Image (cartoon, rainbow, N blue to C red; front, side, top):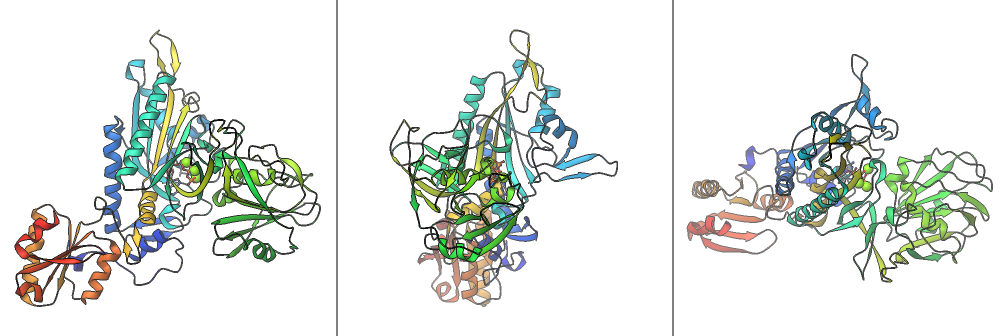
Length: 561
Ligand code: ATP
Ligand code: MG
Ligand code: MG
Ligand code: MG
């Protein structure tokens, strides 16, 4: 590709509205552009990397025995009625009516459609097991799309669905997919961690998430440094049937005199540095009635006031499921008047809050507490870094470390949650009708594009791993002489003939601009042809960010292989 013909609109400065590094760099390097909230164009250079990520995902899925298919983005409403999720899924499901007044939705996930397909074709146990996957655009009307590709409304997912005659077969496929995911994320060069996870609105039994470790991650994950226990804090502190006895050491602080959200922020800023996000609910007055003011304090101490409409119970603060909270998640602090009875209706979205409320009485620090109903007799601010594995750990008394993660993959043993209502039936070995049991396995392909950048960058730009870089070689022509142009073109042709992906910067720009762009977009190898070297028959070759060495022009192509 010749740079002068390539549509890669790079920016000199960080875009003002981008908060995290991947969002900044993907915009600056001309990989993506925003169309509307949470919806992006993938420009040619961005698409090249996206396709490489997809190729790794495809290769490992195919090796693991899954088969690719493609399902539609538009889904008929009746399938969602049948599965019982039409109302349950909530406002992330974008519904609409067509000209015949037929209810449809944009697929946020495809359990319904795949079950419908398989239910119509499945006859006998002999057709099982079967694992079908697609790589396709999903739409979720996220309440707070942000961080560029990290939390989009339209995004690309690899979603796989497996069908089995019995639980043992499902468990084996779950393992198989788990291992395939480990291979995928390793091949993408990521530092990642699989963690036990909550099953959320998808429902089901066993579940693991795969997290890319990065400070910008929206999830908080706990892992034991003595054993292999690791869980999303969302799960570690939620659910009756979930790991018990994770114990937190809570830092108790004096009740501040708070009358405004600003006071709360000032109060929290003493310890807020390490917390990316903190939610504070300030109950107004002794009797809680009407509304709660939620102040969201970010790591940069920027205070945002968000008014949340909640149902308020007579005995205190009763919070219904609220996606706004879900999207903030993580560590939560509560400020309330002395003696306030606080009852939280907990669902997974509020899981991060549980421990802190429970810990309001220091003697009772178990984060397993669920039906929380106790006096808040002081302001408690918890630092979940100091979390220890308790009796679940029964298996271990090691201390728990907390880190931030970006959820890039999620595997579920669904059981018959969808196959039963959707009637995915088959004739078993004994000739009886039986319901297939299911697993589902997702990977955020477009989120990965951002997550990789979160781990692979430096002050000059993106440092793509060699197997994912948009081009392996940046060929840079320095100077304007005919000789230098001809020599560059010859090398360019040889590189193409050798099958090397090359971006030839033959623009009429200063060398400084060319080097800056090559580093920004993250090409791993630079080959430089300049007048001075050419006079001695040499080119210069080096890795991105490293020194360059002179090599005879005749050897230049071989050096890049
Ligand atoms: P999150 O907790 O981040 O909202 P999720 O648990 O709702 O994600 P899943 O239903 O598990 O997502 O979907 C499978 C994968 O799709 C996720 O692991 C994630 O990588 C990706 N994904 C989900 N929502 C988004 C989004 N809004 N933008 C980009 N990728 C997403
Ligand atoms: Mg979600
Ligand atoms: Mg999640
Ligand atoms: Mg998930």
